Image (cartoon, rainbow, N blue to C red):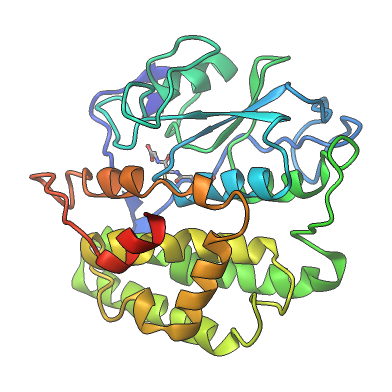
Length: 318
Ligand SMILES: N[C@@H](CCC(=O)N[C@@H](CS)C(=O)NCC(=O)O)C(=O)O
C-alpha cells in the first residue's frame, strides 16, 4: 500500500481484519462526481463536467467492484465516451500492475508500471491501498472517484446529454427499494464471500458463510420476474450479477463458500445467464482473468494451482 505517497514493501495483500478475525474492506477516498454541468455531486467537489473522451476507467477484470462500472459503461452505451485500461489479473509485489497478460493493457497516459503510480499522480501524499476501479480525469490529471457504487450511479445520469439511454439503473420509483436492498446484498453477499474467504477465525467464517447463503436463498425466493425488481434491470442487478458470475468458478472453491453453487439455484442461475446475455455484458466478464486472479492469491492458495472447470461455467463463457 501507499504511505504518504511512497510504496511500502511490507504491505499485506489481504485487507484488514477486526479483533474477531473478520475481513474489513478499506473505505474509498476520492468521492467526486461527474455531472452534466460540472456542478458538485452528492459528495466531493465540482469541476467534472460530462465530456466525451475526457475520462478513463482503470479496472481489473477479476474485480467485482470494477466490473460493476464496466457493465454500466456498456449497458449505458458509453464505450466511445469513457476509455478503459485493464490491469493484469494477479496482484504483484507492488499491487495491481499494467502489462502483458492477454486482455490487460499498458498504461496509455503515463506509461506507469503500477496502479499505485496513478494514485500518487492524483495525490503525491496518498496513504492507502491502490484499489480499482479508478475513474480518472485526463483533463485535470486527477482521480474523480474510486468508489464503484458512486461510479455506477453517476454513469446512469451524468452523460445523458451526450448519450441518451432508455435504461435507468436507479429509477426514482424504485430508489427506496434499491437503497434498502443494496447494503444487505453488499454486506452478506458481495463482501460476504470475501469475509468467508479471508476469515481468520472459524467463527468469522461460519458467520460469513451463513450470511452468504441466507442472501442467496432470499434472492432465489425474490426472483419471480426477469430481474430483482420485476421487468426492469437496475443497479442492484448489476451489483448482484458480478458476484454470481464469479461464485461457482472462484468463491465456491477458493473462498470455501461451498454449501451450494449458483447452479443449484434454478432462478438465480437463469437470472445470471439472462444478464450475461444482455448486449455488451459478456465482454465485461473475462473468466480467464477471474480464475487466474483469484487463484493467484497466495494467502489462500500458496502454490497458485488453478483448478479446471466448473464445466457449466466454461460452457457459458465459451
Ligand atoms: N470500495 C471499493 C473497493 C474496491 C476494491 O476493494 N478493489 C480491490 C479489488 S477487488 C482492490 O483493488 N484491491 C487491491 C488492494 O487492496 O490493494 C469499490 O467498491 O470501488
